[in-house]
Length: 250
Image 1 (cartoon, rainbow, N blue to C red):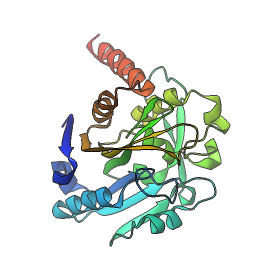
Image 2 (image 1 turned 135 degrees about the vertical axis):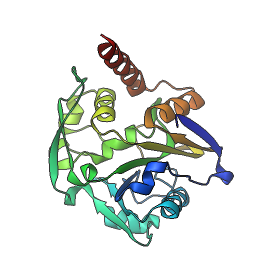
Image 3 (image 1 turned 120 degrees about the vertical axis):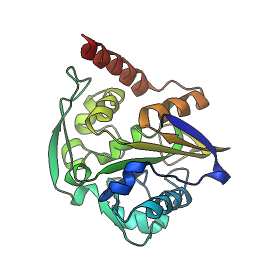
């Protein structure tokens, strides 16, 4: 799969074949705040994904988020109605951290990342996020991975530029994360388009009526084209892909 655009009312999640062999599946929702969709991932779309997984697999399903500094994931999940049976909801702050090397020969921002160990123990990784444009930049399934970075190492992993991440170019960090945490699937919930400026909890909402699904880079490219926005991390990822392909051919 590269990317597919579904009419939202017709969306039925059909997992890839490899999910049937997975022992543990991780879902990264956008759940930094106890506020409803489109600020966060909608319960409706998350439920559709979980139903699809259950049709083909008895794998453990884990939700993982690093919410805003004054929130805890368990409380946020409860407020958002993420009360799915046999689904484990975790907070990044409660996980053991491991350091993972960025595989890019020339990293854009960071050569290594500290990430929750549960990410590495999962066989299939899914990012499910709203259709969001933040300060004129697309903020889709790859950008959603920023919430996996622990506050103890990077300041606020929910998106505010502080600490180490505040001193780096966030678009460069996201490009590095794409290669360091190779998620299998991105789902962008475009039932509505959410446009925000400085405050990520407030913005303009427009009806859109679509669901984007596919490999995270491809699906974010499709979402970026649909919003007619520049998405900095996608340009950097494309450049790195071209360089890696050239190295493999040489």
